[in-house]
Length: 308
Image (cartoon, rainbow, N blue to C red; front, side, top):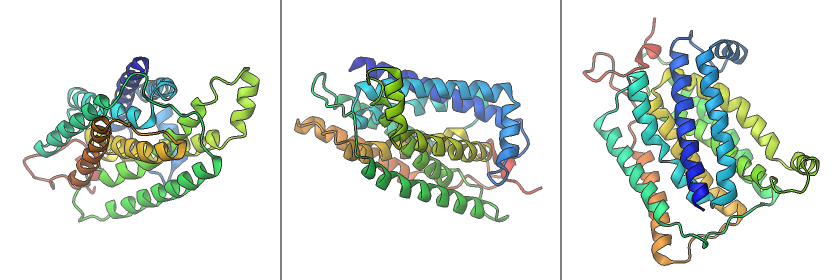
């Protein structure tokens, strides 16, 4: 079990570093948009810094496969949330982004939620599921993908209004978080094929499942959507929102889809439920808008939203 915890913390570090490097690269690039995906890809693939961030994210993906082999879905998501603290520290150090007092309180609450989830773990008492019915996975994932794309387009339309307050990125984060939540369930599904005897048999079995196709969809759309959102908004806020949505989505729907049992001990069950509820409350009370131009608390990324 503790190998899974170590792998989750490593994945957190790699994901945080990857997002910050991509954000730094994007600030030096011309404005990108989901309406021009080919141009977006051409610009980011020409940036060595962005490629370095992407490689860090890919390494985090590999670490996540190990996590899902050793930890229950709900417990893994609670640990993944801890990466938000490192992300905020890296954003302040490398990007010069500042967080408000309200946002710092929210991050403290997220750490408390992480502690509750970790305390709910018990060596040898956790059931790690290996499979889920394909129809159930599709029933959960397909509407979520449609909702994520619709929500992102709605946020884009509202953000184009000249007199609208600069958005913090909460709407973008929720939309991308839904896509990454589906991706996380697909990663969990892929991890179940790692022990199949023989690499050829494992590959054929995997290709007959919906998981690689869900990964392709979320990878393509998630890449374009997340890069445009990162360029417009602070990484120190949009990524925490995205991570929170992803973790909650995966913890709740993943636990149900893969049939993993919650702790039987009342105290551990209460800790896991309370940690999840606290993370939801943090997301609901996160500020939706940054201060308008001229406010004493400007933020990095405001210039991308200022009309020419």
